[in-house]
Length: 244
Image 1: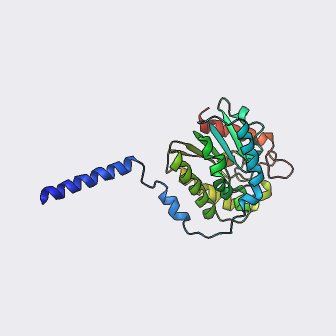
Image 2: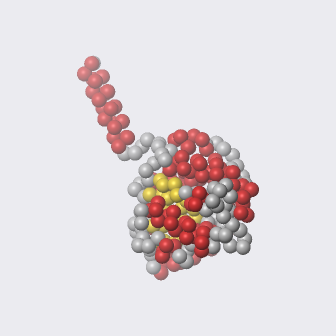
Image 3: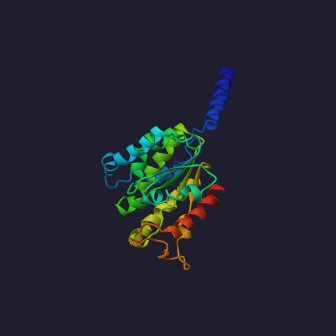
């Protein structure tokens, strides 16, 4: 009987060790617990808003499918506005630009099977949260969607690194900057829990010398979207994060 109990104990230890080795421990649990069960606004219908834009990406893929194992850039208009320069700015990396303006984190999750996972990227640059917070979604609801995105990527592509770009400050949305800061704090905490996640703090670099207000000169006339000077800031911060 004693031998049987010892054998069962040893087997349990071995199985536990295997489970840990296979990465079955939920490293994101501390943040997952903070955002669980937080109710927010209903998300707008992704298909109705972006079905055509995603179909255009798929048409381009049908003509020439991007190579696997490269860098994918996905996100809202701040990512979309970078399409013209991102390949040059992040050279020598090969970049698949897949920004679609006006999107939120729910949209990014919704379209993963069409413009994220098929490419099998080794690295993902992700920018969302801007429209989410401006649209009245609480930080916890937004971060829960980030976690859903991360879970799905790593379930299929466990070695892929995800670079989460901080929600940027902007003059036109300064009234919701506190909620954006709360979102960034949660995202930074999330990235500290998994070596495959990197928090890219573009927000701090976009502030003026006081560190209290966002720079006005790095935006277009709408005071929301960045001009080239804004993207040059992103370029430097991003290149450092990517190690290029």
